[in-house]
Length: 90
Ligand SMILES: [Zn+2]
Image 1 (cartoon, protein in one colour):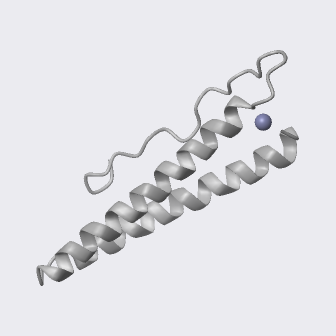
Image 2 (image 1 turned 90 degrees about the vertical axis):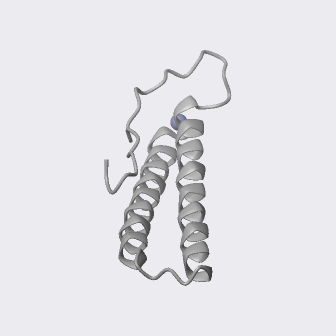
């Protein structure tokens, strides 16, 4: 937990590629996690905007920390994805 935001486990068990399957399960899982991380970033930005509209400046630092964490997670996932598709050839 980081400031009330649960951090999901980054590395899931590596799913085996089904024989004859054209989709790589790991690749799809990583894409799903990246999409989730991007949605989380948008969600934080939305909440930050709502606070600004409400002229609530008391949580500016919290938003900054949350955004930093979410951006870092997104960057990690993108790097994992890049490494995976490069090495796995899927
Ligand atoms: Zn793959």
